[in-house]
Length: 308
Image (cartoon, rainbow, N blue to C red; front, side):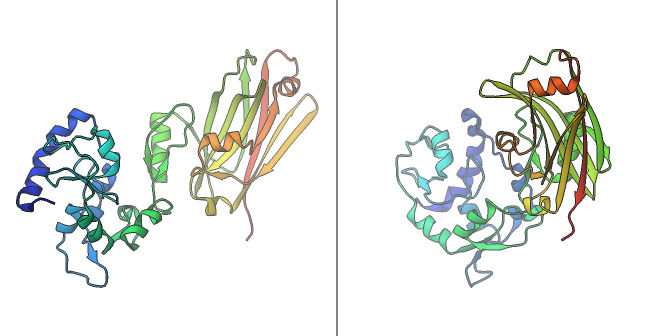
């Protein structure tokens, strides 16, 4: 690396130039969290590093996230993470020199000596990990934020369960209901219009948790089907404490499904494509509806907590 007397000043002054690349950090919640103020600790020797100096050395000047090897640098010693190196088109965002493939081995070795708190410390995780173990932990940390479970659009909102419930209600106008039993009627005047459409999402509050009921129309190959399934707003180990049943009735017939709600850690598409729910072929759905011209499905359901 080059002499570091002006390194931090150069980094700060360079932030205004990043708009040229259209790069915005996707982790503003981390930048505003207590993690940003945590002390980096050299393994076995707490307090050796200053409160911010080592952490700032490992901070990518573009996305402001902690850099993991390989850490690249330009000929003038300015460092950048691998992800941002591609985004800035291999041009140093500080001095505009070509980045090339120069590795900052010294900084990578410093990184290997560090123990850092989980980036989701501000959401409740209190664990501290060696530098490389931290990344693996964060990919599965139970405190990591959830993706919005709404499937009608590609929503990029992430957050904890409480904030996502508010988001679903205010931004997606999702119906909210209290109780563990429900009865819904789905009506469609032209049931032959099936183009991978999401029809409805309803959230139920029961047992102190939230459950998302999805009802959809899509094609399996060339065959149009309707599907209802339940997702749990929480982690998988909590979801497995519950079961649910769905029942469609009509025209003197009954079709029943019983299963375990899937965690919203599993994407909506993953659950739907696995057919883990009540699946009804269109011909059968129209038969349940009575006249065969208009879709009128009556679906009843119940959620209960398993006795462990």
